[in-house]
Image 1: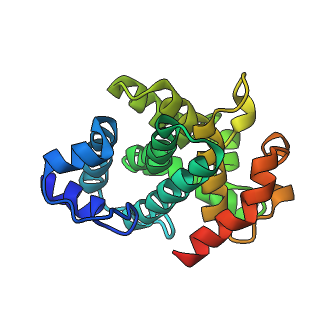
Image 2: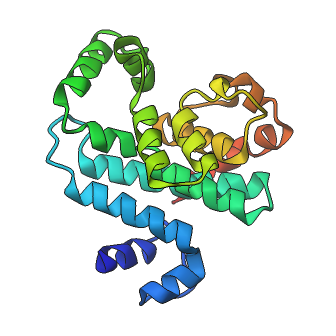
Length: 219
């Protein structure tokens, strides 16, 4: 576990200024909450069974989660100077797909969703989940994170990153950042007018949206 965590921390997704060679140094640089989330993240990904559906392999999910995490932190940094919000945005981005990993052991769940998507190509994956199962892998992942004792803002961002409009208060930075990062990563042709209208109307979002797309393309 230590080896895998250090390998991940020293990857390009973290852009550390120096090589991290010990768990103690990792905690000092990234904080205990981030390390705790990384342990959960790595444990679940490495214990996941083989998965046969194209675009939904464990490797695909790992790559997507890492990209979302990195971009989510960049977005949060543009929106807020609070380190706690930036950290929570990174964590919620990284853990946003954890529900899919948990559901791998229930292949019929994905089979029904993918069959529906094949017949309805204009529908997003999460929309198909709601139509068929009346819930989504996002809620499943958020429920587990709540049991693990992750912060409320991370749990909320994971639960609502596909449907931020369900949040009853003003959108938090982690929710906005994770939602936008997921949209940009999963939809290469996404434009400002295609996202949640309330979020799009935020002046900082409108001003920075193209820059965030470029960050992903340049990595």
